[in-house]
Length: 107
Image 1 (tube, helix red, strand yellow):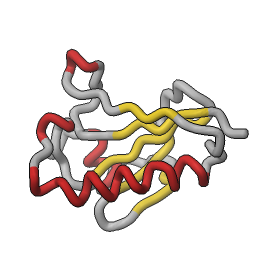
Image 2 (cartoon, helix red, strand yellow):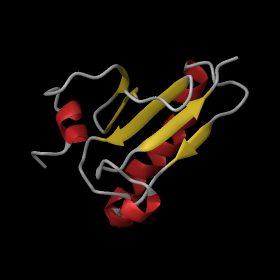
Image 3 (spheres, one colour):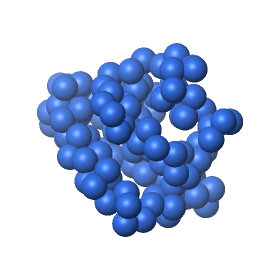
Image 4 (cartoon, rainbow, N blue to C red):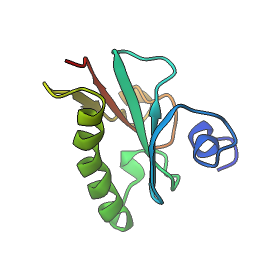
């Protein structure tokens, strides 16, 4: 999707503070953090939201969910963290590319 900012970040067209990357996903620091640690984990494959995920995305979504606690721990969130997936405009989604917010205060 050519006008998706997260696709452009994944394609290295727009710089971001990347903290993790593999063939399927990318994690970077949110530019408007709502917590001392605020990361965004995105699939490199574009789909608008969790409501647009289907059976072909099952393995990817599982990998992403297993990566979340690893990323949280690596960023000092050892006492816990918050995850958030906004879905659709009614759910507060602002960028229509699935993303998981990982937020908390390091200890």
